Image (tube, rainbow, N blue to C red; front, top):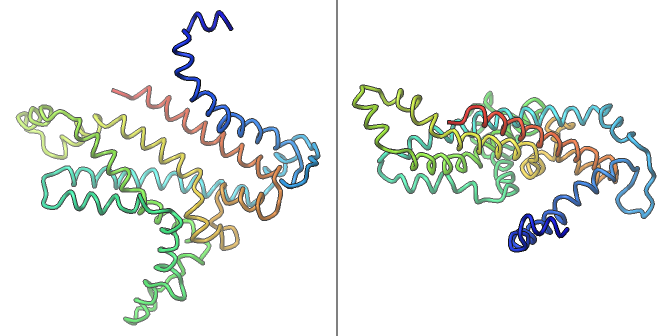
Length: 293
């Protein structure tokens, strides 16, 4: 211990001590405790835990609903990363130009981000519900019954309805980060490109996009982790239904832990979700190291 203090200095140790304590209590301990609990059969309430080894893991890999949830999470991740960040980039390019009322547009686009996901979910339920939804009632009112769709209750559409809602809410966050990145690109680069005869499209591809590499990867990591742990919107809109068609890992954990009282199994799924997010983040960071400019 004395050697450790002499090497790093008492002031440096004191400086990081509060963060270290909080990290150990609120991050390290829950992860370790979850991993420990995953080896037990436990209902979350009883003081008695039954050690069952890897049976929870065998159960998970033989559970059809787990694989449905995993598949939905992967679809959620891929589509959210592509469309949320893609639309965010294009809208940031537009709002970075000198257009009338652009500050108002920026505020409107960012407004959904400050709303609670549960509220956003209930708003879209009111809009998209098959029986009383505003959109379907509008189509019925003008005689276009062929356009009436059960966006929430149809198994093949439910997860995509949630993904659309998520993209609608969080695209503004990508816009703000891209706008911040655009402000840091030297104007001289664009002026030199104009002199060389580069078009707006060429300047965007050759200058803007590469200069925003850090922003691309920051959003890639944040969006991926957000997609993996998404719960609020799914629960508010479909609760994982119909017939588990829109189940994701977080709602699967909720169902097993708080409804069925299978806490040991639920912690097994949560550990798997944590490892999935960790692996994806490490892969993206290594990819960033290879392409950064």
